[in-house]
Length: 185
Image (cartoon, rainbow, N blue to C red; front, top):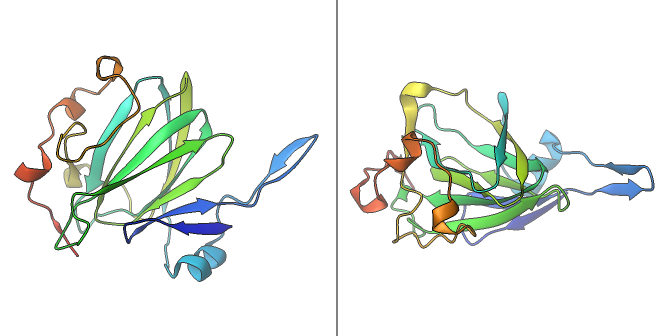
């Protein structure tokens, strides 16, 4: 696998080696030893999740507060999404900045999102199956989120605003300026 650093510490893109022929393809989606060697990070994933969404669905920008904060390794099994992580670590030189990565069933990219980031994605294909590994168990009382459409974040979700499909909960998150981050850099 290749590890591509991003402009924000704590976020990296993983590009696996894909072996393909007339029968199809094979790739190793995760190897803890190689991940640690190439990223310098020790991560113990404890939970795998999968969601299916249709075109226009936007999920985010979510996180879990400490002590249940999660690092995630996300990928698309089917379809095409724009995956976004926003730095919400107080004191970070990149606080409020984001990295956006297109994840598709064809590019097999994965996006590692460390603790201290709000995360979301928009579905750009007719349907998308999205998988993610987490290094902490889900804790409903530790949920947090910021507004997906905060103009100060400047995120282009690659969707027309009138076609964005949100959960009721995702319609009511605070803007970053009104948010007290539980994370420090």
